[in-house]
Image 1 (spheres, helix red, strand yellow):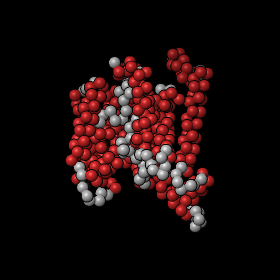
Image 2 (cartoon, helix red, strand yellow):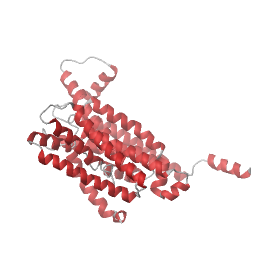
Image 3 (tube, rainbow, N blue to C red):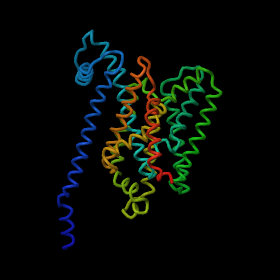
Image 4 (cartoon, rainbow, N blue to C red):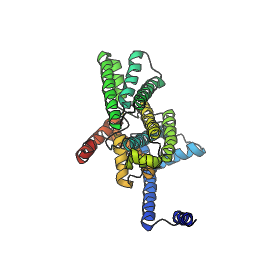
Length: 362
């Protein structure tokens, strides 16, 4: 009885001062990140050749939400903001958030800070699916959903195959990574073969898709990617303590804590690759966000997945948002695809991580 009372008193006792300060600091960082994200979204809408200001953006959003009249002079700006700029920046932010959350899951579950959502071959498989649809269509006009469907089906099918083989054979994490690398090489070769045999127009369409872009963003794309991300984030937070146990203590210790390691790892990896597959299907290949976004978040808020996951969503969204803004301004009025800009940013960061974390490669 005494022991039970002591345990209850200990559980109900206030947290130590350092723990309270840490929680307060974490909350401040999360709120600051959210405020910065909202401001960055609003400012990003103003970037472009149409010359709209922040006041125009706020007015357009207010009219879209609560209704109102649009003057004839403002009609053109309103159309640019609501039909072109807003879908673009919201898709960039939601796609970056999804890729970054996916990267946190992969790095934690595989206990390797240098892996990304595309480690299991998601990106090259999606590229092959899209290229196959474009090649089969030939000169026929493709509906918008056809390429998206081809990329998504192939990415999810390959991910399911890799995870199924790994589960059935009870592969170690290192073997799973090697299997993903093998799948990457196979589908890159298949895509190259399609490009080699394609005519000029088909080749141009394939290459344009593989650049990674949010140029043709529509509200449909924003809704699908945004809803999937909004649903996935609470699910990952629900398993954040299990993820902490696996990432920090290892499988054996996590099992001693009551974590069902196998199903948790397979389920969360499946969620991770699904997030990446959906983003790639709508935006093309955008690499490095799932690698760099989580590391930016860790530097700012620490490695506890209860806080890391939501902040990684913000950091990944901001990273892709900034990359898109740079792509629209660096050689304006031409637009550099966001996948190219992110590669320029992510490449040096990846090299830095390799050089400073050599022990993770042993």
